[in-house]
Image (cartoon, rainbow, N blue to C red; front, side, top):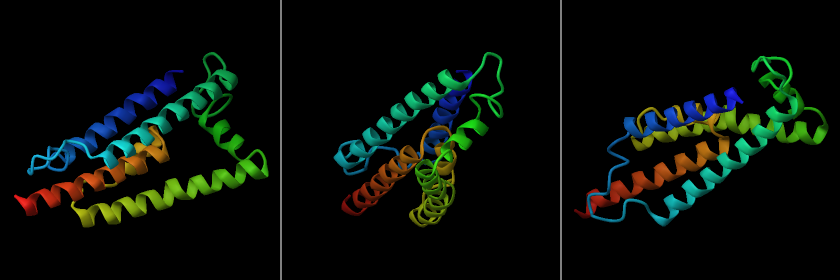
Length: 159
């Protein structure tokens, strides 16, 4: 269970790093509009639900497979076993390969290219956050950030 707590702490740390690196984006818009838009709130809720569900199933995995004093990298209840079980049958392998491509190739490619275009500092951190939270959370957090960038830019043109 220690590995799950470490993931949680690292996830919070990376999200904090993203927010601190982009303080200008995460401040209240200059036009006095609400701090969060309904769309941004929806993205945050979806991201939070994905984390809760992911941690629930990860806890089930660790509780079912880990052994006392086991290694979190290889052996029972480890990352190695987690990845292997993702390819245990054709249905799981289909979902796992899709998830891997989305998370390891498309997420960083999209957030880095699009993030720099939008003036988001350190957009590669959204990929890093996915390693400790979830792929769905990283996308939801990025989309919420993009909505916030849009609102900040709109506020600057109306003031």
